[in-house]
Length: 448
Image (cartoon, rainbow, N blue to C red):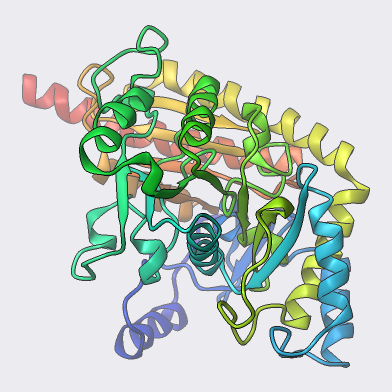
């Protein structure tokens, strides 16, 4: 059934534009009201299959699951705010003890915040205080948040930084974006030249490696376009950090929490970090961020970092119930994620062969990006075409989100059924076929 946008939706959007400061609203008029599992409904009753997990938050289904909702309701009747950075609390401590078991051996200290950007802000401060250094290395295409400290590390799109500088002591370097290599080389013959570039240029001509506190990196770049680097890229980055006494900070905010089939996406690359950050899916729909450090790094002085709402009991209750579900169902979750990921990659790669507009398909598990281009040979980003595809999917009952210059992210809930996965992929392919066909028709008309 075709989605219909009625007066109520139009009025809500008009009211929004009058009172809300602009954020990153999508081009399609989506006003969600309720949902569960694979599906979400808008305020007018339109039904959608969700391939966005509401920006990789609802990993266990739209609105979490019944266990998460039940745990939150129970906590709401007891106490929601415990001022955890000033007082103590059993639930946050119990959850932290459980959370660190999901990380490599030797990790044992946790700081709770409210979001991914706050988790990364804490990581910056911790790296500086642990190393007594001030500089940070970050990557072009990386996204670590929009608050001022984490924004100094973000370099995904200029509009995210424009007007907010000057920033902190962050130096940006090329990421291993092999489809569009910034150094115009080919993998694997390049020998991971982007890491050699770091040593040959910024660390030789701009700042000494002895002054760099940490390197922050996403295992798979999210906002930057769902870019999956080669496995040996991370091994060279780890070696670079070790040679210079830098801490490796792994931003798992979007890629983590089973999204790639493993709890930590970095585990897919055979490398361990010194500090991890996590948010989004961690709270099952409620706001929470966490910064997890290697125990051997030590502690920080009392009062040097804190917040008001970190460790909020309602959010912790949701996170605790969510993690309990993951731990109990780890094997089945992993098996399902990999099976569904293989299905999606097969279907999407078939589209890549079939349609000129599909330039690249990349991903791990259920974190997949489809990069759209004007032509496979020229690789010019198909920006307007992407918007048309997103809108076409929306009006046919499928929710998707963009990333990078012209990529569409495919990130359904990890618990999505095969039936919903197949139907959603059909809607997606029909939209691609329609837009790609329109371009071919217009091109033929021009040529005639």
